[in-house]
Image (cartoon, rainbow, N blue to C red; front, top):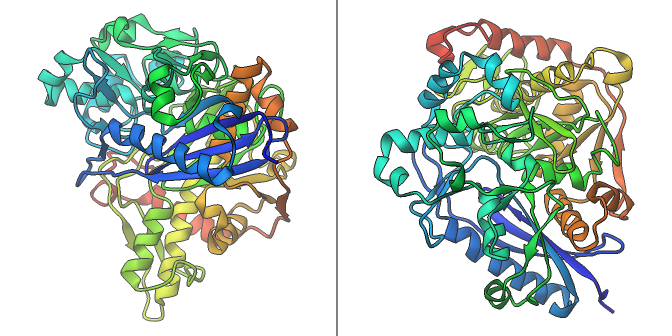
Length: 496
């Protein structure tokens, strides 16, 4: 028999929406409804109509209801975790004025540079927001809109993040959370509120922004009658404030004040992401010093080029993604969409070290190595910013939790093990963002701590892999190319 109380955790990502139906008592995953998104744009542009997200949410919930066999009357709460940083601008009726600028839209790189200088440099930004404006951040995208589409900016009656937009459609309330808000570069992690000076710099009226709830688990409101009819759910169920996708994945992993602290996570998806939950508030220009959804901090570093970039290299070589061997002397930096960490928004892919005996399989392996070394270097910086020494044996022996689509790939896992020298843990659940959102929904319905809820759920065993000897030769070969690459090659105005 289906359980009586069920919560829905929504993962609204770049490419699709997933709606996970979860037993609120045990965390058992009953069903996952799915619906795709459409991303448009060429060159540096990446856009999606927010109405696509709303329709995908409706379709995913309908599919999940059908698959699970759960009666709609058994649903007690819903929460949305969304892709971070996207800029959604609405008119007075709550309708999008234009397609959303997504996190991986790099057109605002010049605006990011100008904003950084306007406040006095990177350190000034990290002291306030924990992060420095780059093309990914919402503040940079808003500046781009002001300069390139001034009529749209002037007509804007509301500014939202992707998850804010969906939460407002569900609850009728304009609410965000500290975690996702901390990715805007107009929210101060030092004060826990919007920064008036930064809003003035960006010419943003505070009335355009959503209220910041105490946490992602706070009850934003109740499902409105209109949303209930659209989704086939009962009106009045709890709607959590929700959060960003990375914050939600941390909840799903049990990271936070009521769970694990200072344990690193590496997510292999469209982007490569490293993060940890910490009580320390790091301030490093190389990181995004986010707030977490539960009141702790979630320092994070993100690379733009990960699984999709390596898959593109495989396609160019006519190889299956798993038909790879270590790169030998070849180094391939797969920066096909520019890069965020290191901050190289105009860079392209770079290949060097070719020999007569270099094989296609080695070239593909070199693409894996380039992507993995890039994200692992970011992990070392993250650990240092949290006051930890990445070379300290106690720190180095903490398992690296590997999540995202790449965590299911044999070559990705082997490459991470070989280049990190760390033990690796692969959680059995492949829906951590949705699972974290479900914990937020359960917390909104009951008032409990979401990390404690997720930690108490029986979500399956982890695969634990022992550390292997680190391939320092490959590590140093890739790192040397990164550090020595000249400006014409990587678009940098200084050594990396």
